[in-house]
Amino acid sequence: MENHLNTKSLLANVPTDLLYQALETEKGGVQIYATALRCAINNDLKEEWNKYLQQTKNHVQEVTNILKGLGLDPNAETPGRKVVRYIGTSLVKAMELALRCADPQAAQIVAAECVTLAETKDHLNWELIGELKQKLEPAEAALLKPAYEQVEDEEDEHLYHTTGWTRELWIQALGMPAVLPPPEEVKKVETAIEAAKAKESRAPKAKAKKSTAR
Ligand SMILES: [Fe+2]
Ligand SMILES: [Fe+2]
Image 1: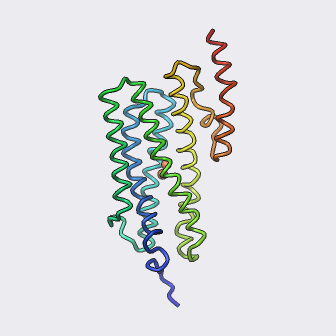
Image 2 (image 1 turned 180 degrees about the vertical axis):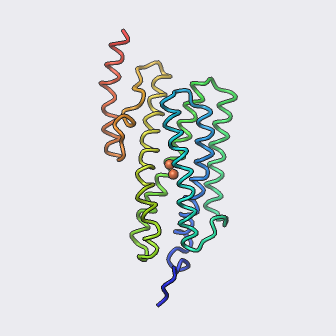
Image 3 (image 1 turned 60 degrees about the horizontal axis):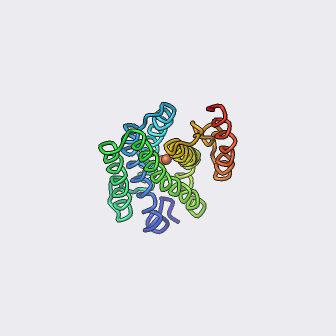
């Protein structure tokens, strides 16, 4: 019985590509946050994205370590990661376009949308890594577990909080009372159910803002 990690049989093809896609998503995330920060005007949002940028840099390291631990070359190219890189570069270019052509408020919204798109993929990757972990041999699962447990909570925050920011920045631009920072951030939402509840709670808050504005 072999006791070394038999990555060829257990992490061949699709599971391996998921890890490479996860690494590429995190690397793209670093570029996306760096560009999004150039678009951000709201100070609370800048603070939030700065925190996420630091966490994303750490995620790059975590996935690199997992790949190395499985005996895989983090620099190896796969068709899947190529596509992820293309999307990441496109999101950066979209924000750069907005910085050149749009007004600052609109560029900030473009950045929030780009971060939400990137974090949707990032969140999905880690959700799938969580699923994969349950199917693996104990030695491989042990390699994924510590990173998964730390990163997964951060990914919930990245996605749900930024989704809230995007919605409220749009509402503000439409000339309606926005709830900033969004309830998702104030309530420190970490699950889809909490995010739905936080979203629901915005109506009375927006109403209160409207009446105090009168
Ligand atoms: Fe991440
Ligand atoms: Fe993330």
